[in-house]
Image (cartoon, rainbow, N blue to C red):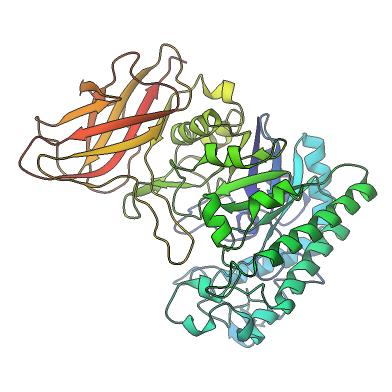
Length: 507
């Protein structure tokens, strides 16, 4: 079992003092700051840290991509500008671009080779150091004048996959089109630079930032272009392993469902059958970790020897409005269910040094046991029903459950409970818009569950929510898939907003 943590560049460089982060940590751009950053992650139980050195520009002195600070103008008035325009700060803007650019530049002025330092210090701390390349990042593409954007993207709108929708859709229409040779070559040049310049234990292709690589309707005919890209990466990894004297593994972070990855042009299963990837990380995009992530299906599709590490996100939600930051008990529930289905480890995204789940210290403690199925079996946990955020155009996402239980009707909620610890106690927890009528009947795996006091106060989404708890008779909850049935015997509909199975273990 293993645990990998993705550390995005914003976590170290950006201003995270304001909303929504409110982080008290202001890091220094020097070796001491790099050490503190790594020390937070490098606790027993963590296998590796994946550092993200690029978006559309590079967060280092790259020759392949423009460094983030290229074109940064420092005025005598103390203000930072780009092409004569003052860089935005957190006041009313999506990002403090001035602090971000200044910090990236400062680190490379203060530390001769930050990635050499990170590699050496990670090895000293006993964790692997990886490079995670974002394959098509389009943060803040709503404004082409921002300093974040690369010249290829800015100067060649014809290379974007759907530039005609610039004002009519989210950022993804502005992703670059890998069907254009110049785009393919541009990104592969950065891959080559990573392998030539930086020693690493592994290289990740983060296809989830952002998972759109071709013009609408052209992913299927162009699928082979990304397979060819993967072959080139594998060749560079083998060369690097020969030079460095140790293996350089490859991970791919891809959509959570295998058919959706294929629809996006990512032929993940064939990549693995061809030996082009050592690890696969099926991932939600951003809004919520996924209770229905098909780990068992991925395990059956992938060849033996390819490690499967499903991804947990920072938030959980049964729908977009009913959403909150995750907690250690909730992450423990997801991980337990993934291990029961055949996962080899867990991968964390947005579980960061300066942007954590609900508690900074408890997140660090979580790192110590999340990579061990055995350790998880001794922990209390929450199995929350969450929705599926589909990232394929023309295909809808999937709700966690039917939220409207009609009068004299019923709704079922499916949840994987992982491996059930002996002697544990369980509750079904249902959040409804108004209190459940006394005539409502709750069953788990056909067995009636009686009303009971809820567990000690639990973090819940900050929406109007009535929490209803039901005791699960001993022996009812079993390993793997379980089915909650909510039978509405009243003449009024019930609005279901939240559903989970809470498992308490005497620790």
